[in-house]
Image (cartoon, rainbow, N blue to C red):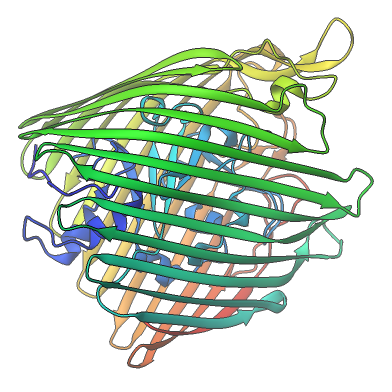
Length: 602
């Protein structure tokens, strides 16, 4: 394969540092931006074409230009990504990656997984995008690397990495439609072998009606980040990360307070020139307190994880192996029959380079206290047709674990449930040039033992392993860096078909079959102008495919002005054409909205 990047792994949390490193091939900044380093796909730094995966990287420049008010707005319309909203500004959102469910997409923050062990999916809507510097979207199964639920793929968000020297402050303030106010501040730098990054943000809004003709439903979010690392003379490294978001939300019949939190410490040691060992201890917390309603509740999930990962280098080849132990704990007002479960795993990943051929093979064994053991594997083959074109083919298995709600919900949980299982085959080709790239992929996924609620002989409804599905799709993405212009295109066709019961042959509910996204930005001296056009096809709100929700097109506009050294102003106009649209029946999204902000710092 092409030139291999021998970069010291700062684990998954260090990718921003790797990206900022000087490119060893001497390529231009534009070329590096179009073929960025990716960690999530293989557990080791690889350029996008070397990863043998379908990946999308949203870098710091993209996040700064678009300045979205939610993480889901950043992801909407990206290749293979379908966003399902139940309102705007902090209201429930789901990410469907390659047509799979929200419980089948893994969200990671700096290498730490965040999810609800009761509901299954992640609370994407409670994350402030200004707390992040970079995002990686890896499409396709990653069970052999991350264990349960990596069926559709993995989305990893990276917090702000420390800048060299300093300290470097950054401050922003702004607001806009719906009486929205946004503030953020940060401080980062390095001294000797120590690096630090601190940040905080505050977002408040009166919001929009959750249902048509209803009252505005507000939302507030306060987030804080602390990140420290120190590298010793011998090459060893220790570090810590803590990210916490908390706030309040109003919905139709009540209110809720939430907490989303990840924290971790790590130590990394170069045992020999070829062997690097890393130990990580982390905790993720998801808490939701619902009140002022007829059914108040408090549910808290904590996942504590210990992971020991080792990387061995043999010339152009790498072997990654490790063990992982995690424990899910659930507490609150719901009386679950079981309130905790352990999971132990061993995993290995081989990255072999026989240029122009490449082989990537992974295997993982999980032993879970609740549902037994599962083995997942992956195999990817790559071939460089020439310096610019790479063919790839892959096969992977994955599984979705039943949640605490599925297993132990009072009077309806089914402790005999098995995990959902899946098999995916994919073929793809990537063209990588100095100023642009394109990537084409086609895949097919078979899902078995899917968990669906159905009546039992007693008359009660309970989850059972009775459903099957087949999902196939094609994705085409492209990007261009040409002088002052930056362009990106994403086209997605997905066919998520239910293959069981009375709804066999129907499209899985709330999935769009077609989507497209076009981003255009231009730098004009001290000014920057840009826009996004996002198109989504129709979807059905029910499994019977009787309740059709029409497709829509969104236009988002943006402008920036650097009016003094280190000072800039930004204006974003979301849904500029004031399109009325929804992705779930009777949950309208916001209309036209304008936001302006002033920023100081790099």
